[in-house]
Image 1 (cartoon, helix red, strand yellow):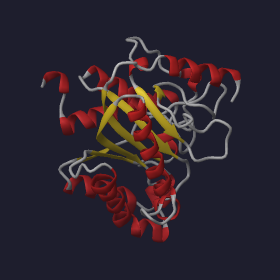
Image 2 (tube, rainbow, N blue to C red):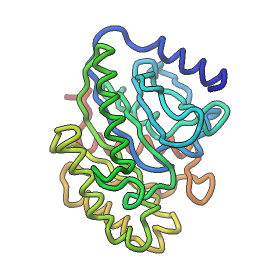
Image 3 (cartoon, rainbow, N blue to C red):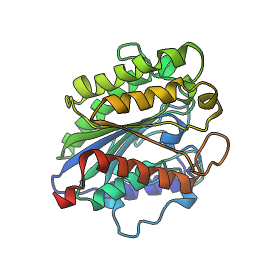
Length: 270
């Protein structure tokens, strides 16, 4: 961990709330655009309203890099270590900030890894894939939250993934695999059977355009499930053929928050 990352981490720890809080926990998971692969924190959006110090975050990137997690602790919303000199960020920043202004007390649990397939990398619960690693990380996060004197209720599952499955047998199996992971998150991991689910995939990715089965699986699930919604990435600027620019990641997070509000409603008006 270099000096900049250490300073960011230390400052975030110091600014965690001391009084007991009950947080609305949002699970953000998937591949590179969930992580924010091109989200250079040199372009981290200015926190005009001073919201970040009051939004906890626990993140894990199961990758071989020096800075790949919040070290098993809840820190405050901000750039995550690695990828760029000042770190990186994903759509969770604008997502959480927007919900904070709408009466929620968001806390972000983030687990993601780029270029990963649901069929071959994440796998189903119990198959020793990334899903099992996410489950273990989630339990660690909930334990740490309790040890910090806080409580939390999971309010949503954001799944940004699918490009790596958009070919061959993985594409054919995607619908069942997607349903399986959502069912587990709802019924076993969080014990919230009607947990709101937000789905997203890059419709313009070359794999998705060539074989749209995964995209259709996202849309079909959302159409049939009253507590799920599909979000589009159409029109968002790309840094390359696959990854969203920092500006687009901010816009994507805003789309995700609007989708959640469409499903659940503006808490500040309730």
